Length: 313
Ligand SMILES: Cc1cc2nc3c(=O)[nH]c(=O)nc-3n(C[C@H](O)[C@H](O)[C@H](O)COP(=O)(O)OP(=O)(O)OC[C@H]3O[C@@H](n4cnc5c(N)ncnc54)[C@H](O)[C@@H]3O)c2cc1C
Image (cartoon, rainbow, N blue to C red; front, side, top):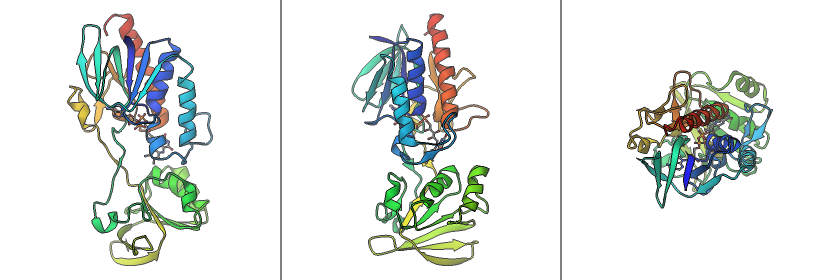
């Protein structure tokens, strides 16, 4: 079977691309390496509220994935999970997409591989890492697990801010620290954090150590690069970013800048008939947001149709 388009990666960008391909009645297959589609939303923040999707004042990660699945499911396209794409080979008709257990022929390819893997940035400090799952978290799956607990959120960006706001309603006490002197999250999030009443924002503060016998019971925090304070604490959430795992894409012959694929304004990569969208791409002005991935998905599928129409696949 020859597909018109194979979409690599089943995050929000891949799922929306599959919908757009179905809308155009293209023969389309999505291949996701994990056992469930949904990307970062499903695997890193299923219960976190998302506020910046057009038309949804608020929607949680898992619910958005469900809606994307339903939307894509309207058309007779194919979704394959549990297969990692490992290579791309040129064929007379387009491309052969090789996975760890099969291969699929297609005219065009759309890479929506996001950040590749979901590896949270860690402290790499054994005395801290030993508390993982014993009160130290890099992923929050259930807000209820934090009910009536003293919670520390570490990080100054949007993810940390969103977690702090979501957990403030269930935690007994919530503190958010950042090593810089200002928080980098959206201005609106900062306003909400500052006005929440039950969130303590502490800039210029770094985690120095965690204390507790087999479970977090306190944290030592270095403040203003000078003195150290010890605070009683039950749960520590680290939201200091993710380690990109996209190096494998380089071996496919794709032009990259750092960990990202370089694309043109039509989302074309350096290989003919191979497009990319979402967190995995870079171009001047790129923002890593779900909404940006949706727009790029529409552009990429349209450009792939043009390639197929022109017989250039
Ligand atoms: C904690 C947190 C909170 C966030 N909050 C927001 C928010 O409120 N609003 C917002 O707009 N954005 C938010 N983001 C960013 C948002 O999640 C990303 O921009 C979005 O997930 C990117 O979607 P994607 O489909 O491009 O990539 P991803 O979601 O990373 O999905 C990529 C998929 O490709 C798969 N894949 C990778 N390599 C292969 C391969 N070789 N073969 C097959 N499959 C492969 C992966 O397993 C994954 O499922 C947040 C991110 C985090 C970490």
